[in-house]
Figure 1 (cartoon, rainbow, N blue to C red):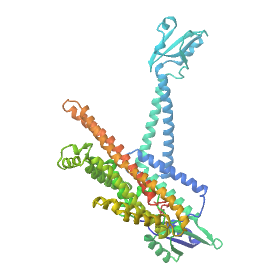
Figure 2 (figure 1 turned 180 degrees about the vertical axis):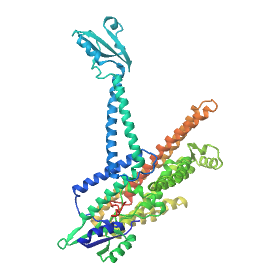
Figure 3 (figure 1 turned 135 degrees about the vertical axis):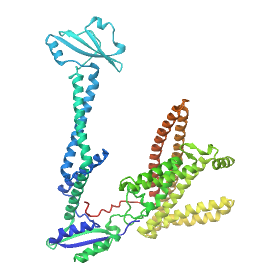
Length: 605
């Protein structure tokens, strides 16, 4: 549900404006309307600084250092600059180490040597040449004919040196390469020094992660507050020869009472009016406990417009079902549910909602695992368990199996969601433009639901479809008029007819394509079950017959294999239902989106 917004316009005497802003920030419910098309260079620089601070905080968090007692009196700004410099040095040292290790890999074959010795030999007109040649092309007679010393073998190549006197070229068909600039012992020394410096930098970063992280976060909040305050100043319009400041902002209905109480108490002149779609108010969602867990998924696509339906509570049950359909293993579902419940007590506050979502998805995975008969890759319909053996016998008697039923179930769920999306589209059109523009969508709903109902009556009551022809003609007539002629009562009939034909083509081809897209639910569920079964077979066949050792090998293969399957299949179960939601469901529901988050001007620290 989208919380209704009120637009507040404040008129404040310029000398009282700073105090007014501070008080409004303390109340923290006003989403300020931006008046500036472009931000100033100073504000842009501050935003860049905030991004840098956020990046530093993320990097320190990733170090997963056990937090100690934060050091007292830590200057957040100074700590940030030190950490930023340390990370820059760390990256520079890593680049140096990478280049050095590449040079070592090239020089290692030549071993250690003295550059001074090579220089002295050159002074005596004795030149050391470095060669490499494929092993198959190396002539074993060369060492007898020339002053050659084979240094080493690597990757099918022979590396050797030749001592040449004067400028006479030897008759050797080998590739001469550039002599190493530094011996490998010197490179190893430099590598050791760089690694030592890296260890020292990492120790300092670990200390900052344990002692200075809170101070750096606080510094980031202070900068954000400063930027917000500066923008609030810039967003005000000067009126009455710069004596009065005009500021506008949005306040949710449920949060406006505290603000109004402050304004009345301090005699601040204001005007409040209910928000309209034309003003593009910010979006604040309020859903119940179950649907709230799925708001983060909707944010990945877009927030609804102010006058649209919030589709979160409508797609949430479908997404939960689709995820379970795709993963479809009762064992995995139990793991996900238990892990979510245990971790919910330990993770940070902002991650608790994610754990709640994982729990619901685990429940769905368990239920579909029970339906499909899969438990950690074990096909329960083949185990002889009482319920599953009876069901397997019934399926065999009807010349079908659970996979065929799951195939039809995926199509049925797809059809239900498509029709449900069309119903929401009709409601959305009525809410935004009035019922006159929703007639065409209502005609399609009537045609689809009526057609399914007539077919159902024919099948269940064993009535031939020919006997139901009058009902079919009536349905086609009424829905056809609504779709082709009355699809938008605000236009003339001829335009409606032309657009109706075009929309009919799009709907027929679109619905068929959308419906077939839901087969992916069945396909992903099957692939997850097959992969789990394969890992079980590998564990049994590769464990051998050695007592105890066989069990250990089997356990390792099962743990690693099912971990891989859970990750890969879980990723597919997360992504593909999301695609069905954002493409098929959102399209049929007429979702346009484009809403902006409600972001109140408030104190952070």
